[in-house]
Image 1: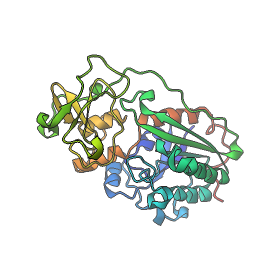
Image 2 (image 1 turned 90 degrees about the vertical axis):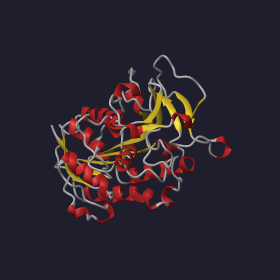
Image 3 (image 1 turned 180 degrees about the horizontal axis):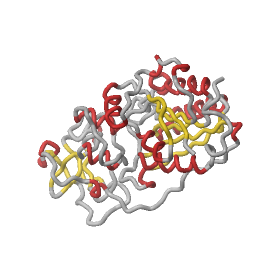
Image 4 (image 1 turned 135 degrees about the vertical axis):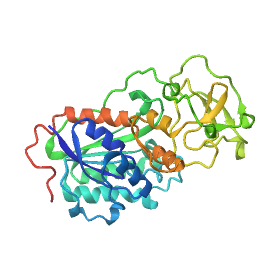
Length: 330
């Protein structure tokens, strides 16, 4: 049996990829970023609404599942970690506002793994309390993308919250072994502008001859930062290992994907290579400038992880046994 969902902070539609794969129908989407909305429209056929804070809850159709990878920059190690003091960190309250009005069966959310440690765990505890007070049984877990067939170590915290009256027992999917590496996703005819000057690269160990189940860092690009630190966008990895977490922005030359040692040269990944690693389909299109495509990938979600969780949600038979209409507006 199918279900309906809304796609908040939708980005380029990772949650939509997962939800539609298990029979879901999207009835509403929203994202503040105009370039993300353009990419979303190009690939799914409908234009998301803009700033969710300006959307009246009654203008959102009834739905079964609220999906949302709410903005993570305020909790991320790569950001300033200002938490709720950052306006982006307050977007959880938009989820609360919409869920309180529509009372959906499920809240399916995602954020950075660092939320577990942010403010000594108080941020996570506050979010769990908010969701529980709303009437939900809150399940959360940190999962790594490489445990679900992705060639990237991207770790995220996932929330699956069922309305208390539904009495659902839920368990997150189990990780599994997979033989994947960056080299499985590479294009063979790559434009020269992706390549970096080899003279600017310092190698501190040779490439591995065998595939590894983690990242394998070989060196760095340019000069070390203050304190001998290697910044994001400066690192060079082997394609026989996994990719690190892609980031939305970086000031360095290999920003977004980092650099990779390929056939004796170093280059960053193309947007198409990065999207494949994140689990987006081959026919997924970026109608935006390349810099915006990297940003969108860095802000996105690992689709195979979401699909695995979505299958677990459907396996509870919650949609087959439902007696009520989508949501129950309070």
